[in-house]
Length: 503
Ligand SMILES: [Zn+2]
Image (cartoon, rainbow, N blue to C red; front, side, top):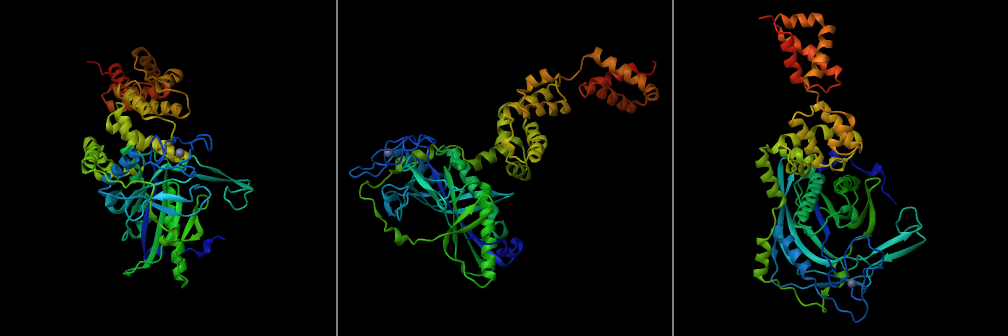
């Protein structure tokens, strides 16, 4: 059963009458070499069921041992999110049956998470929204079910199912936000900006490859609506495993429209998990939400408690790298940009590209112009993300260098980029193959100038009589004759020399 479009409220209307409250639970697979409680490797894409052992298969008599690096990574994340780090905490057993979980329980953390009560400042447009972090805890990932023979890859309609336990036992960090209220119509954008910032933070901390498309960062999105100005929040739904930044925004938006229609119709929002559908941007009902007591949590008896010493925590804190917010502030100062300039760089997804182009030797202003101008236009035309264009920051830096040195003018530089985007090779290779160098050789220019003068005798006469502004027409003719390759400044000099009034 799917909800029909007719049961959606218009977005603007929905947020004019209801206040959305959102919450995000983000799972991040840690990039440790081995799994959470055994020595199996964690590499993505291995032959199914090749990275398994008695511990992660839950065989009788096997005993887990905690991965110290996973603890360290989690503390690193907790510190970067301004959390308190527990002095002593335990893992807990979360009991439920699922075919991709061979132990029939998951080792997780329940009432004693490793990190609690922090926040993340999230840039949204030119402002910053502080998102509270409830907890950061550590658990193990489950295996993966593969449903074969159906049209959708879902269990419904499949012939049979296969299970791959390679992922079972990979360390998984869950970052749970506090409810985020008061963002109104911006709620979907804030949700997306939060996940983006969290992803960038994880990348800077080097704790995960955070590849959403490979599932190493996955998001559950909670949404509830309350009538405008009401002190009590509404019933929330939890949309599971939303796997792209764009989908996070769409899922929040859809739930706001759907729940508004439910409430408008005098019905009640049901507390349940929901599935997000990429193709349609809609969510559909999953199972009704379990209560914590359904999981029969109890402290994991096979593991010793985790008690990170304060010395260790401070050591980890001292080694934190530059975090994304600090890096942005530094780059903004180095490049001399306004808040607005910075916001447009971020919104265009160009910040890292520009930074890499500058690192490859281009002046910041040039790097910014290429990425926000010409290349953004190309990305729009082809409907791709800027970062997905087949051109590297190093290539853009080289094109910029060729323009700076006068070897190319802007028009020729665009043709070089055409070549790079078409896969013709390096900028220098394309300049050579397409013969795109600026013609500044006087002999060649003078020949073109003679032709231009002969073709425009009246203009030439004006220049001779001292109206040097008219020389522009002749420069234009020279540029045309050389298919844009003439060094325009040199051509102008030569024209003025040739047509100088008699002394
Ligand atoms: Zn194992």
